[in-house]
Length: 79
Image (tube, rainbow, N blue to C red; front, top):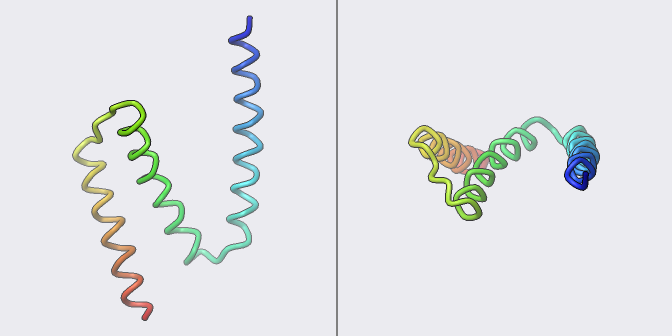
């Protein structure tokens, strides 16, 4: 029965975390929020690799290279 309690607590915490992230992104311009959302995908893959020994798929690595390249290009263009 403790598993159901843990699932319930996890659901409540995840809901509040999502609400907090949504409110945080609502105050940002899209030019700032979009790169942050893309970087979360990179960190998710990195955490999965380090924590669970999940090897990222080739398409994930290719996407990461495109995201990082785009962020670097956008930063250089902004200067």
